[in-house]
Image 1 (cartoon, rainbow, N blue to C red):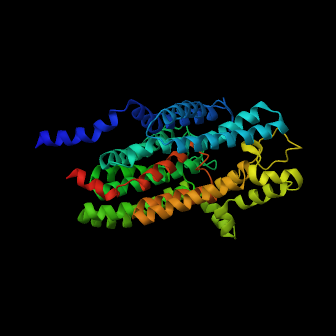
Image 2 (cartoon, rainbow, N blue to C red):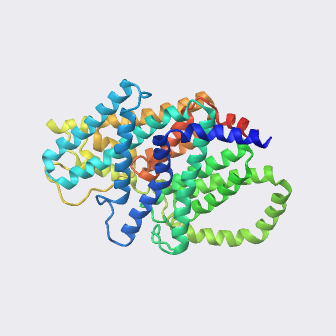
Image 3 (cartoon, one colour):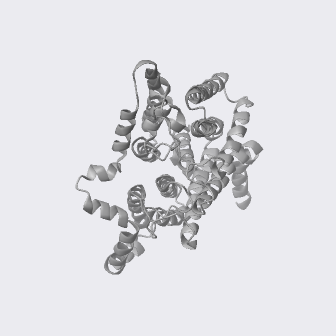
Length: 429
C-alpha cells in the first residue's frame, strides 16, 4: 500500500517538475515576486526610494519574468499563432499610445513610467497564456496548481506578519495596529491574502485535509491586522467559513469553545479589533453619508479627472487612445512635473490611460469569466473572482498592483480548467 501511495505522489509531481521552464515561472511568481515587493516596501520605508519611483525591486523582478514569459510563449509550440499575434498587436498598441503621448511631454521618466504601467497588464496576459495549457487539462496538475495558489497567499501573509511582528513595517492610516507589512498597497495585499484564505478553506473542505484549515486560521490573522475596509470584508467572510469548518471537523470542541469565547474572550477581542480598525470606526462615526465612506472619495477623483480633459478637436482621440499611463487625464499642453493622482479604480485607470476600448474589454473579460464560472458550476471560485474583480472595478489596487494582479490570473485559470475542483477529492482516496 505504501508503494502504491508513492507511485500516486510521483505521478502528481513528475509532470510538473519535468518542465524546468514551468518550474521556474511558477516558483518565481509564487515565491520570489512577493519578496521583491517587500524589498520595494523596505526601500520606501527607509526613504531610499519614493512611491512610484522607477527601477524598484518589484519592477526589475517583473521585468525579468516578463522577458522570459515573452520568450517562453513565443517559442512554445502549444501556443497558437493567433494568440501570439494578438499579444504582439496589444503590445504595439500600448507602446504606440505611450510614444504618441511622449511627443507632447518629451520626458524620459514619464515615457518609461508608462511602459512600466502597461507591462503590468502584459505580465498578467502572458502568465495566463503560458500557464493555461499546464493547468486546465489534467486534474493532477490542477490540484498541484491549486496548492501553489494557496502557497502564494501564505508567502505574502508570512512576509506581512513577520514585518508587523518585527516592528519594521508600513502602517495603514498611520495606525500602529494596522499594517501593510512591507507591501506598497494595503488594499492590494488585503485582496491577495483574503482570496487565498477563502481558497484555503475551500480546498480543506473538498479534500478533508485539516492542515489547510489551520493554514486558513493563520491567514485570517494576517488579513485582520491589515485593518482596511477590504481586509475587514474578507476577514468577516473567512471567519464565517472557518466557523462552519470548525463545526464540521470538531463539533463538540467547537461548541464548548464557542461558549467560552463568547463569555470571556469576545469583549477582549472586540477591544483589540477596535484598535486595528480604529480609522474605519472613526470615519464611520463622523461621516453621515456612508456611500462616501465606502467610496473613499474615488468618485471625486474620477469626476475631477473628467473635468481636466479637453475633448474637442484632435484631443477627441483620447477617447480611443487615452493619455498614457503617466499623465492619463492631465492636460497634455500644460504638463507639470507633479505625478498625477492615482484614481484607485482600475476601469477608469484603463479608460484615461488607454482609451474606452481597453476599459470595455476589461469589463467584458470580467463579465465573461463570471458567466463561464457559473456555467461550469465553479460557484465558489467564481465568487472569489467576483470579489477580486469588483474590488478592481470599484476600488482599484488589483490590475495595476503586482501583488494582487497575479491572483486575478490564478482565479481565471482555476475557473477555466476542464475539471471541477471537487474532482481533487478523488486524488486523496
